Amino acid sequence: MASMIKCVITDDEPLARKGLQGYVERIDFLFLAGVCEDALQLNSLLKQQQVDLIFLDIEMPYISGIEFLKSSNNPPKVIFTTAYEQYAIQGYDLDVLDYLLKPISFDRFLKAANRAADYFAGRQQATADYIFIKTDTRLEKLLFSEILFVEAMGNYLSIYTQERKLITHSTLKSLQEALPATAFIQPHKSYLVSINSIQSIEGNMLYLGKYQVPVSKYLKEEVMKQIINNRQLKK
Image 1 (cartoon, rainbow, N blue to C red):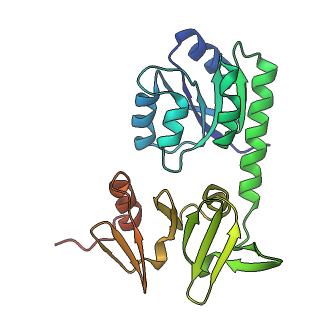
Image 2: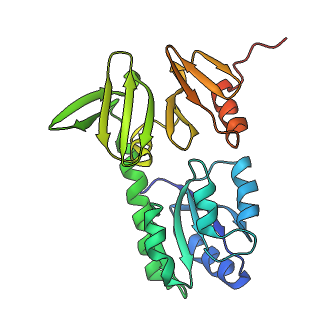
């Protein structure tokens, strides 16, 4: 039996929201955590609770689904639900799980839900504490505990440890999905950092021994919450 997937519906059309809600209620491994009318409501909801999956419309007032996804730091997985097929390529570039064209039939919705279940089941099975990184012609075993931070440079990643620096052809998002989510943060669009490796924080910089990693001003509040996590000594 599939693990329960906590999901949210976001669509500016009342009939579309009602239809998707009915579909979700018919699938036993989906739990509906909320229904939002636009991306602003969704943004507020995600600040209050963690969810696994968003059924996300694209063309909405204020901010589109694609714009919301691009502006989000480490968002939940997404299945787009839209009447416009011209966004399909852009959607897959954003690593969405599926792209449903309205009107959405239940059998097509079920197929997308099953795809999400397979994805989350695969993540739960990935309990190893290491990955293999391809560098030139070699595969290097890398323990998660070794990683200090990762820097993205175009289509390449520089992975820093205490002893070495590995360069591999990959994306930050791909590596982030392979790493334990509670042990690493993304303080900037070009960096991933091991929380345990952070020795001090000053201004918009994280200090990891001889290394410094910048914190985006737009992400600073959330990053600080993740790093401190009620571990700051009170006055």
